[in-house]
Image (cartoon, rainbow, N blue to C red; front, side, top):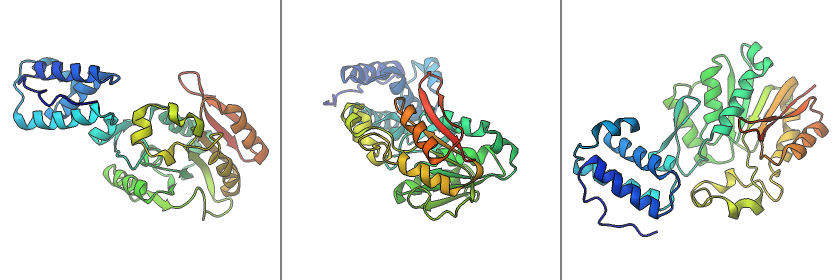
Length: 293
């Protein structure tokens, strides 16, 4: 969508917001007002809700230039989180860019489900592995919440691990999360882990073309595309988890809303008992979990 290079002749907050909002709406950007206000607030160094208190304030040229550069990216379809360079997850701010998947609220529910697990709550030093860590949001959130836990985070992408390590350092847990560049649970000894958690690729390849453009164009496909049935990675992870988990250990996997039956069946065939599926806050099947006897 072409961008009006004459945009931005207004000097005040209200004028700049109005012009930007009109441009985004014309470009079909979803949640235009929220995104435009968020970008302007970030450029001005204030909170979004504070914009209402300074609608008549004149914006200096440097701030306006930064805002318009980011606005062009937004109108070009780039996700807001990549433009900002960060996203809030479990109450903490994580750096994100095109090397990693953008953390989403459903994955917060995955972390919360792990933290509710009785074995994790009762153990002073559980050994937990986050498979396909991406930005590190799961592993780091667990490290921040469960101080005594030993956390291992794996990913096949060395670039993603660069982001994850930076986030661990930023949030003060670099010495408590061990990052491994490898496939799934490769290299872990048998019966050495208390819990495995993963938000693996689970989008069916046939669904890829129907995803929002900002996902298809900007987010890493390897972190999303789970093959023809969406279970390509999950079907490998389940048996590897059986091998790595101690007796009584748990596996938690985020799944697509239509994958409850096959995911549960995979776990049951591998010997997990119980093998269950939990729903998210929207009532959709979202988390498959199983306990190794």
